[in-house]
Image (cartoon, rainbow, N blue to C red; front, side, top):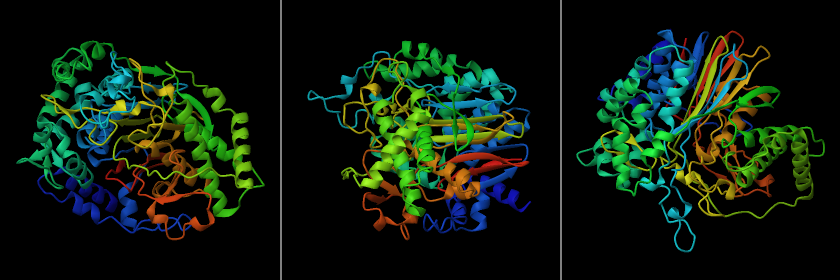
Length: 584
């Protein structure tokens, strides 16, 4: 009872826009962060209670209390995990506009115990049918500063609405109007701006078009933490979607608003783009990770490279002639990450346009071969030169994990790419554009928003999906029940965040909360730097790692995970964020 009261109060304070006390309430739960990798997690029971939930029937973990509550409401109305996921997805698009939105896109892995195999849905943004790479390049072949990040040309064709409605139509139980009602209410009634959102509005204010400033400002100034964000036009757009379904984004009034906006941008996105957009449904990628069967997204997701990290770590862990203790653990994790991101940089792209030998990348011989090369490097001390580049922080994307007692599950990562996407609002809709064109490789050797480089495999082509770091996963037990649902937002940090969490939970046998909160390591091949969370600085054995350049950076990725432990379902929303898990 004590915990339910806390959850209710947290939800209440975050939901009432005029009280302006959501952030103050959250600070009551903040405690000193973890000290070192070896010392693990310290923190008050209140903080753990806020970010962890234990239920028996159903649990959902999201990045905002209103989204989690929407999922619970759908379940109580007789819906299933898909109804809960879709309702929470629409709500999160309303309350985290800097992370995701209905003009963005995403991936989802859906699993029902009584249906073998599960399904993978790719509803990511696609390059417009008239897209050409030279739009973003100057006469010398260099990327034009900011063009792929800000403004109409940075936007790819959105797939979010098409994907969510397609999945709900196929698997959901409830009427669409009922599923979308919480998002309509959140839009029209408003909610309190929290610190993360306030910072994003402030940072991007000067780049917003006038219509966006009207929504995200007051009296010509950016909204502040605690002030109400009311989005009437967005509520109206969701009402039209609830009534008209997918056709609203193809030929309806919302589509007309979008096309009128792009008419002023040389028709970068056209009627043909919206009408021909297709959700790509397939069998999920199936593999083993840490001794468990896992379902995840095929390319252009980076899940295959995350699985390669795991497989190479497993091979390194069998090596006898290797570093011991905590030092050895750090090197094994780091080198596995470096290898996975090397493959991602060289091979990653849309499999409809480039060949990606997934079977080879996931094979035992490949993992053995790469682990042997890492072992030789460690023994010989032949380490590469260091890069002086620094990693850029990520404030975007979101993830939803849903699990019920029968073993049905949804794992979905969604985004508009950068913080507030293209920083453009489509007049008349309340919808914020994505800036996903920056996820393509614009020029060889040139990093994107997250410092990632790519090859020709990820060049722009009409209708192509860019390479993505998003890697939603569902783990199964021997009865075909989902027993672990996990994913994360955070740009290039997504695969390593999931890797870190799985390692702490499945290998070190830490609690789910501690595994999510544990200080993380991150290496993404380029720049050649080991990034460590500042909380782990005191006691981190940097002096014993002369072959690494170490930088201490706040880890912006946030993991959202639900696991079955006996008869209980345990949900965790990352304590680095504002969300909470809920259920019953």
